[in-house]
Length: 149
Image 1 (tube, one colour):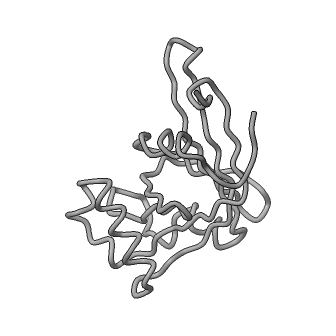
Image 2 (cartoon, helix red, strand yellow; image 1 turned 45 degrees about the vertical axis):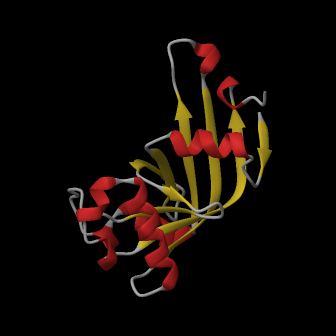
């Protein structure tokens, strides 16, 4: 298992070929919460929107948002599974999470990246909701899918 704070090109491609990641956060008492998320990566930060997919509560009331506001810690998991276990691999991105609000320059850029990556976001009103930004602090990876040639 390798641990550092940035991705090389092969690892970046591994991450970007994944269509979803799992976002892990924890509340003030450390109780974990994990949800699948869509994401974009600009080479420095990961972004995931508070989109219009059906949810039980509004964006600011989502547990992941409350957890990020309480602790600012998050982890993204990108994984690849095959029945041939010699081809397994994962990347964990541990980092500092925060919200980027509408009107901020970075918010507009993040939405552009998300819309470029996911056609479904082109019809959603992402401009009106915050976007979660995760700044990598530590990256852990494992598996044959990530071994350098």
